[in-house]
Length: 143
Image 1 (cartoon, rainbow, N blue to C red):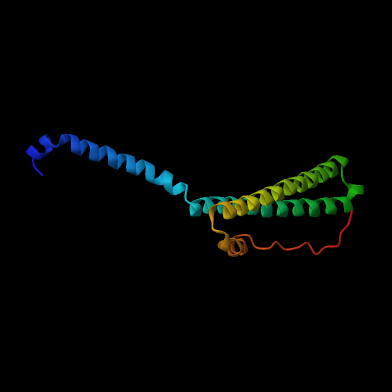
Image 2: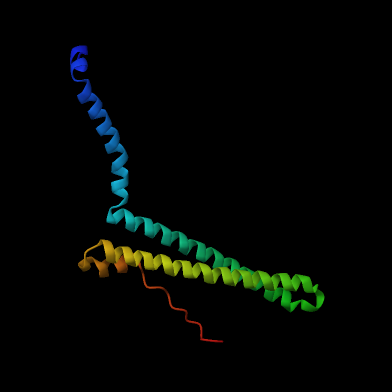
């Protein structure tokens, strides 16, 4: 490559450079639209939602234990402390329910991506792999 070829083929070099820049910009966008990348994105969202739910459920259990302890000593405590403990328990329970719904929505998104983006013969296998059966609540039903 010398100065003469650069001067005579400057338009080709300019076109090649612009094509290279366009390819560098378009390739990641095309990769984001593949079925695997969509599945990986919704799986990451589902994992995050499950983690948030587990964390909030632990906090709700902690608030419940604290409220029970304070209720056992209700005759020696200020009513404000009891109200705050009950309110913290109610808030924790409500947040856990909301985040559980978020987990259900994330699982539905994973199911939708599997259904829309992959061939039907892989659906059952992928659902088993990515959407494990949830553990059933073994506690007795109560109102």
